[in-house]
Length: 282
Ligand code: PAF
Image (cartoon, rainbow, N blue to C red; front, top):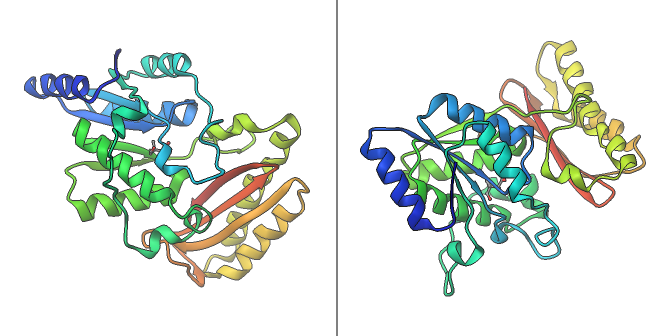
């Protein structure tokens, strides 16, 4: 596996692959890789001739007081995971390579979409995500790019950005990968103490309860009923503090009154100081 630290190295390698007629898949990550990321690389390797993964903790998507400094970093382990799953090149730039002095251009969706869900407590987050992902698309020029459905809002925002900016890349959303007890895999799970890890199961318990209610009803269910049930389940866990639990349209991300096919039910819950997200689409 090639390790590239500069934009130029990536461009030269991709150009050489293109000259051979090969297709290229991109898996953007911030490192601290887990089974969820591994599944993205596996999907990319099965659909593209060559796979590029980026490992870059992107400072512009962290707000003041968030965990930019403490975000887990283990590049050696990341490389082992990537290579084992069939990644051909990892792009691991320094911050100055991506944001050189004088950097001043950002990509921002002028849409209510980025103000919903996580956007309410992380107002500049999606501007940072769209900016770095645009740069990665321009650097790697992938045929396909792979993102996890755990970050459902990020996936919807990137799809909209790709449409709006006419990026020639197909966005592939990959299913959430869960631990045995249902907790969605996340790099931030490493922040949890043993007690918190056990408390964190409440997110999936609330999802399971909501799914059962929706399945039992067989028809459209008022969103209030589903969300109240989920809030009740989460509130039973003393370590848990709800940031949001919402039902929104899966494409526009605007709140809906009735839960039906295509509704995204998403939640963000603090377990101690760690903010965890999860979701499912009906
Ligand atoms: O999902 C992530 O890990 C990040 O938001 C991404 C897409 C790599 C951009 O930094």
